[in-house]
Image (tube, rainbow, N blue to C red; front, side, top):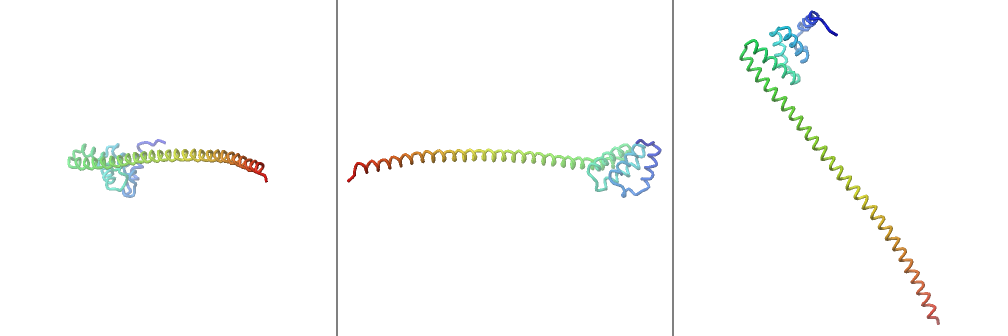
Length: 172
């Protein structure tokens, strides 16, 4: 959908009649951008100033401070240039700090993931070792029991045979 410049100006005029505080930060930023493109720098400056005073996302304030710096520089307002340059630098630092915190959180999450993965692998290896030990112990017990039963039966046969043989030889 494309609209003509005339239709766009009509839409802006209808929006411009409303109080800026009734608009969202994004809408005010877009309105300021329209004014910028139509070379109405005073109105653009009003819009961007209102964005800086609103509690909107920092990225919108960052854009507004950058654009205000450029507008004031073109208009030759040196004191305002310094003011908006300072605000722009402050927002840059804040956004970079947020980005650095996000990167630190990501690195921390990766570290925790690796640590948990290593611990899980260690627990798996330990459970496998315990399972092999349990199977080995069970097999050893069964073999020893089998050998014990065989030896016991032989000893019993030998003992019974010895008693019977003794009784035959020592008859009264």
